[in-house]
Length: 111
Image (cartoon, rainbow, N blue to C red; front, side, top):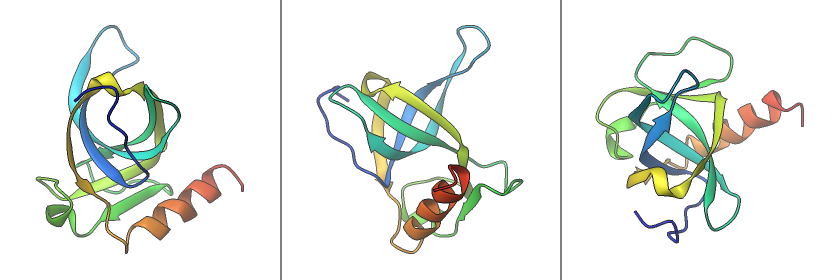
């Protein structure tokens, strides 16, 4: 994808996600929370590891939103990344899941 592509809250993307240890990176799905400017997006990790914490949201309709496996959004696993890391857009979060994301973000940041 080109860095000039615009993304919005709720988009589900596949991108090269960097790890804090060394230069490792992996292709993984993420949920877009915001586009900060022309080049960066704020995202939350999406994982198949299952729900484990207070800030996790199960994506019940995972197959309808472009994911290959049952998945969980980890709202407390945030990153600001360059849009140049995006491989492709997978889909969009469903209307039923979006309010849960906003509620967990408010809880995380005590808003």
